[in-house]
Amino acid sequence: RKQIVADNLNSTWTGHWNGCSTCLGIEHRGKLVACIIRHTNGSIGILHVDEDHRRRRLAEALLHSATKALQEKNDPTFAFILEGNIASESLFAKMGWKKIYDGKKGTGKRRAKRLWEFKKGSA
Image 1 (tube, rainbow, N blue to C red):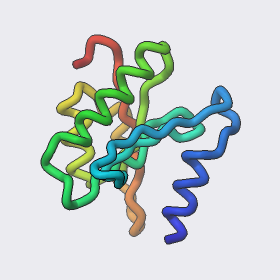
Image 2: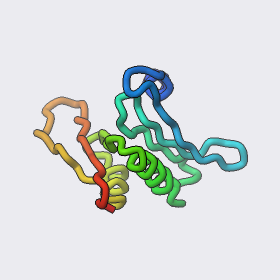
Image 3: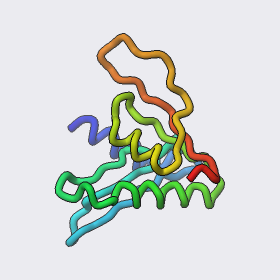
Image 4: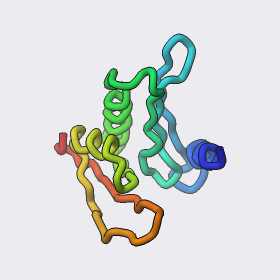
């Protein structure tokens, strides 16, 4: 619950990064079933699809739309993916994103965030 509140604050607070953040969503029968946000630091994050609506390429559609919108504005297009999040890593790689920093393996219980980037002409 605390993480959801923190994520909502990060995604909706209009602060330092060009004064904006963005959320794209897909509704089905009046219910939000998939969304992706742009954090105030400019990174794309919190790509989520409800379990009942998975395997319908909704995450792919959201990532494509978010990537295209940022590229059209010539904004930096980057994301941080937790190490071991195979679903996100696979989707981002499929969509032409590249892991920029693999870094060293952590020794603690927390998984490290890895930087991913999309460059024009990658897809």
